[in-house]
Image (cartoon, rainbow, N blue to C red; front, top):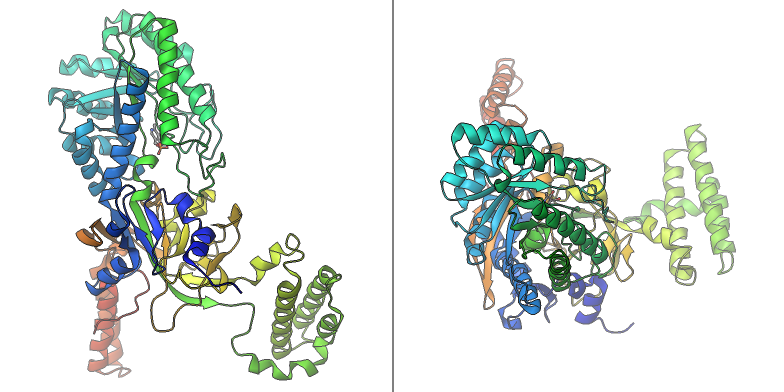
Length: 635
Ligand SMILES: Cc1ncc(COP(=O)(O)O)c(C=O)c1O
């Protein structure tokens, strides 16, 4: 076998394809994080961060947030648009607005407002709660706060009052009925609103999250409704408040073609509104700028077939062309990119707790005598017949005979020891087939590779930390963050620690487009084996739930520079008491119930008072503990 190199590991996990320059493998075989244009010495190993946090008492799993990466993304998107504008001599400018729903965490919004201020980066809100966040954080009269979503009087009043504070809120009409309330509230408060319209694009983009386009999309106005709203505003002498057109084709749009067509349609509607007499000025192209999660740079739903530069160039050019034809002034272009801003920002680190191997029974000595068991005769006969040509036939026979033994077990004709021996022999022969003939018959035996793969139990909850893997089969890059100078010797699927069979990951990025298994190492005996799940900054934290009452993980916000990192903010994950209170238990009351139960046991002489004390202290310590698997119990 050839010597294993770092380049082999890079190719296996395709880190250079999806890492976008932020993640790479060091000569020491560890994943390092860095900023694209900085020298390799500025890189920091994720393992050193994990170990550093562990030494400070922060346990795995932990979500790392890299503020430098967030800043880099804000800069990248803004400068890409500004460059595209400069390149073609576009007369308008660009203003980004970050949709809070993509990652509402306070640190994220604060950083975007702080670092994004130089670009007048604003916020997009979809609810009252998000608007309340936005009003407190935006401190820049040139940044916009785009108010989308279903709006009641209170939402509208808040946005109008924001205008009095000098915050550029724009109330985007999503449903025809909203116009009446906006007009009524603005009259009542004596504040003239900035009004926007959300159009329903007829373009339906490809991809997972694209129901926002087309006639049946739930939000937005069709052209008939757009004209009705314009007429209403004109009749109320409020058409001068109409300054923005918004559309959103969907999130993670894989093809540039759809983006171009969407921009063209919107620019035509925008021009139509100007011709109708609205002042306009702002064209908001929504979100959708995709991330290349699988590193294929293709039009698959986990990727995108364009770069950020191409996206910006095409949008600007498309709008400019239509403006030229329609003889109208170039609008300020707004975009509501969320995913493109925050995806690279977070990495989930989790330790492997245990493995379950199918290929070899852990202690085969239990089955040494199995060759002589009559129940196994047929299975063993298959082994003697096996050759390259009949491998598939032998596999079929093996499945048949194993089924037969399982049926006999049901009818009491095979005992538990015989059945266990049969299962052991079955897997041994299947492994032999796969090893000897799997490469020759790669396509036929691909399924076998999956069947024979190990299960690695990792310390996380899919439902809490990676809900999109469960909900829509989203692919995230996953790989060990160390030992990458050693050839991985196992193939595995991952299981989380919820007791739910859905809590598994069995689709991975590999050297083929997607793989059913992930190449991993046999975990070291005396140390953690740590896996990283990358590109999890968008949507995952906000959509996660409390399945099995596994709560928020620990979070560490770090910046890295010149080969070292500094910890800026640490958030302890949920304790057991926290998650219990989320589902309406009162930890104190539960403690009281246990105290009473233990007291009764003392009264009845089943335990001593000292034992009662120990039981109660174990119970209260459990209440204070992390909801995930804890390896080092503090005394
Ligand atoms: C109205 C609106 N704007 C912006 C976004 C963010 O999209 P993305 O994360 O793809 O940039 C969404 C999400 O789907 C949205 O619904």
